Amino acid sequence: MHARVTTVHGNPAGVDAGIENFRTNVAPFAREHGKGSLLLVDRETGDAMVVSFWEDEASLRASEERANALRADAAEQMAASEAPGVGRYEVAVFDI
Image (cartoon, rainbow, N blue to C red; front, side):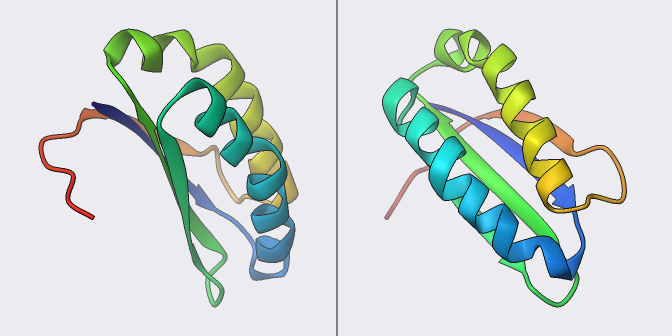
């Protein structure tokens, strides 16, 4: 399994809009094309982290174009202070 981790440094006032954007756009995309996703937020700072899970590296790479568009929209919704950060990883352990 592989994961894409996106970090957004937003505005606290934009957190609720970011959550709604995630529920409406990101989560359905990651569920349909990947293995799911999660959103972590810090309401005090406006920071957020999204982790999306993919069957393999090829699936992760195939989702890049749409992920870029979703990321840009999320950054706008959350009034991000800088461009989002993105990392791509192999999931070494997944235990829920």
